[in-house]
Length: 338
Image (cartoon, rainbow, N blue to C red):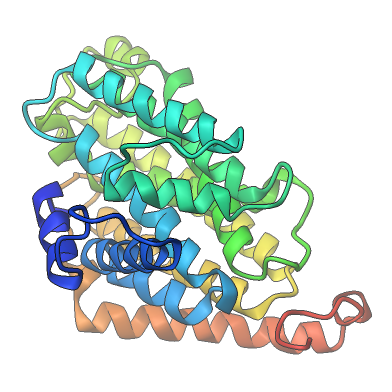
C-alpha cells in the first residue's frame, strides 16, 4: 500500500522547516518541489525511483520525479477510504482546472505542495504538444475513470479505453524523460509493452480491488456466464484470466520488438525491466492455473530482483550488437553518443 497523504506531509516537514509558513523564493520553491517529488517517488516505488535516478536524461530527473509523484498523490487521494464519488470528482475537477490554467500560462495561487509539483512541471515544459502534456492529460483521464467506477460494473469498452489511456500516458512519459531527443517508432506498437503491463496489473490486483469495489472484469462477461465478481475459482472466470494473461504475453512480445527499434539504450533497458517486472506476475498466475490471489510476494523477492536485472540486461546486449551493425540506427546518434 502506498504511503498516505499525511506521511507525505511528514516527509516534507522533515526535509524543510515549515515550508508553508513563509513565502519561498523561486529557487527555494523549486528545491522544495524537487525534494518532495523524490521523497514521494522513493516511498511509493523503489523501482521507479532508481529507474529515474539512473536512466532518465540528467536535466529531466527532477521533473520525472514530479511527473510520477503528482499522480501518485492524486491516485492515493482518489482511492482514499471514506471518500464519496462526488468528493473524488470534485477533487479531480480542481486538479483539471489547475492544469488548464498552468497550460494557459497562469500560476494559480493557494496550491498545496503536491499541486505545486504539477505547476512546476507544466511551467518547465516549453514544447508544443509534448509527450509530457499527453502524459498529464491521459493520466488525468485514468484518474477520472477510476474515481467514477467504484462500486459499479463496467463494460468491456470502458476497460479497453482505460487501458489505452494508461498505456499512452506511461509510454509518452517514458519517451519524454528517457532519450528525450531520440526517435521513437511512429506506429502504435510502442504502446503495447505498457498495454500488457496494465492488463497484468489489473489481474494482479483483482482480488484486492474487487473487495473495495473496483471491478475489472467486464459486466458483459459476468452476465454471459452467470458470474459474480468474486467467483475467482469458477472455470469461466479462470478462462477469462487465462485469455487476459495470454493477451498480455502477446503484447509483451510485440512491445519488445518495438523497443528493439529504439536507438536509445537507456530507454530500451528501462522498457525491458518494466516488462520483466510484470512477467514475474504472469508466471505466478499461470503457475496457479489462473486462480487469482490477493498478493504475489514472490515478485518482491531478492531472487526476483536478480532475475529481473539479468533478464533486462541480457535482452539489451543482443540489441546493442544489432544496432552496431545497422546503419539505420547508427546514423541517428543517441544521447550517449552526443
